[in-house]
Image (cartoon, rainbow, N blue to C red; front, side, top):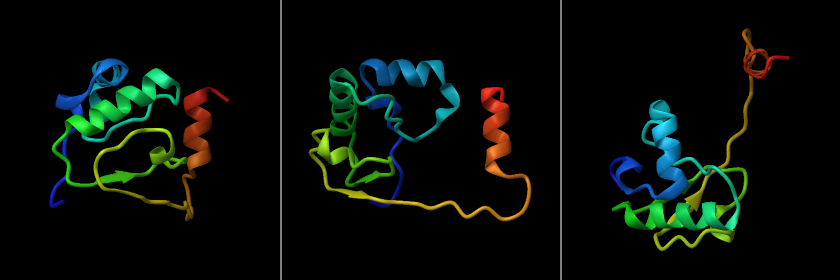
Length: 97
């Protein structure tokens, strides 16, 4: 796995629609819901891609609900804010609170 694969050419269904609605999403694959249809489309999109490895960075382990036919690893992250502005300010502005 030497490079990041752009998932857009392999997207199906609601994932394809998400890329059309949000063209600045870039070369990341968004998990847009965890219903049966969305998880099936997510699995189809992943499995159609030529990726050697899938890096899962979602709050839940997608391997528990999505059939991924490729090697995968789950990464976790933690936010440690330093200084201003803080993420909370951006989020409040975005949701209008």
